[in-house]
Length: 367
Image 1 (cartoon, rainbow, N blue to C red):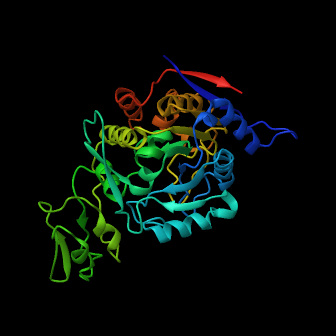
Image 2 (image 1 turned 135 degrees about the vertical axis):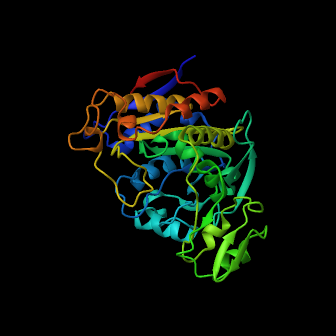
Image 3 (image 1 turned 90 degrees about the horizontal axis):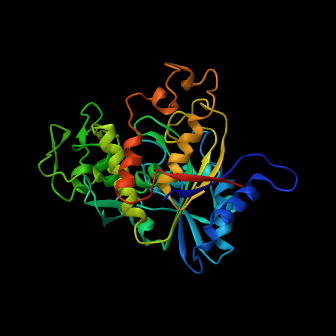
């Protein structure tokens, strides 16, 4: 049976602005049927890497938070720390970056909590029902402590997953540092000796005695390393790095399995905004020009149908001249695959459907 995906375009008039239109979309899509009363509600979104201007503005988050508060809920905005070096590597930098990009209680109407703690290791091991590649997902503790889970996604391209929508926002976004490492690589981290100064901080943080320092250079014993990622977070020189060596198909399947771990067993709702559709992730400290015109707002209880509806909507749009999508073979009607031909975005949707997360079949209902 097809899932219902609700859609609103971005046209407005003096009677209703865009935030009010999003509220009407959420009501029509049935989000108000969730029991929010006195419940802790995690709103998972991406705060944007400093320097990137394509991320969702905090106004959108406020609309969702206000909707929840009006129904007695206790919403908070959340995300997990990043695996790579940047403005969101630990909770303090992450919250600073969020504030630089305009997210604070005044602009969003709720607090920000970084889900996997100060150093990215406050995690919960969550069983993945039906998991083929992941048996226990490593999810940021705060995400799993919430009573209700809401995803608010900026729909855009992604250099490894093909595109980033609801499934990517949930699966990769809610993984702790160790969880992100598990999804991105098939091995363990290594030390780039040209950056290492032999300070020993990594040896002190490692609970498995996998690190040692010889001749003022650290090394990792992969037979002892469990891939927790704590050494990555603690290194003051960013000398410990991940091998980004997982296949794109397995990466997408792991994203689906991590999503399964996050959403199983509690009320969830999913919102995707298809605007400023940049070719790459909001994790970049820059954003390239949008590849297609803005489309609108989508919402559904089904994250699989939601992603499918959004990718279909983007691929139905004309390419913006001069954008990354304007390069290459124009006979390829898959804009995301044209930009990143080595990716395999459909594998995530197909695997998510196999896991029972939802269905690719959808009924698009325009309000």
